[in-house]
Length: 184
Image (cartoon, rainbow, N blue to C red; front, side, top):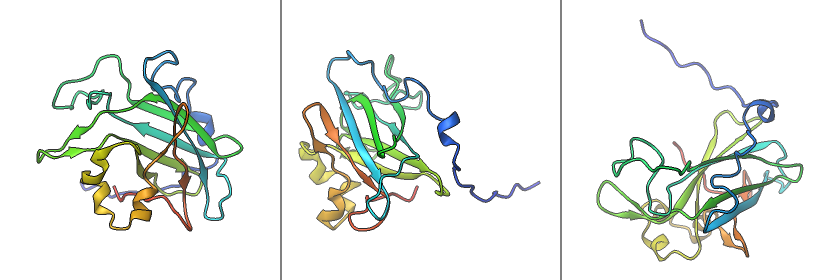
């Protein structure tokens, strides 16, 4: 018997009921040394806030290791690495985490520290996937993913801005200055 793929379904208007959980925005506890806030606004093509989106993050720890048994360097203890935050009525989200370390690639190169970001929302057939890079990383200039974007303005949509307590990463779903999304 051969199984066929079923068509994608939109997330629908009820994602705020079942997907968030109380400590979802806290990848690390508030008093964690080196904790930073990743915050931003999700906007549509007209620049209006998207009030019913959900942001998910997945990242390595400060040593560049993932809290996953398939990490070839061994699993990380005590670090979740995953966050989930709905947007508020102004389209804002906040995730408390730590800055990840650089990652080795299978071919021996190094990926700059980054956070993988997924966006879910009403009307989206599939999640949108992007990355957040940090502005103060020399490795951004050689990152094997970031450097595939030839236009500096497009690359800039993936680089967060430093703030007093972390980083600002706005996500624009369409239009001018649309965030770069990856086909995964």
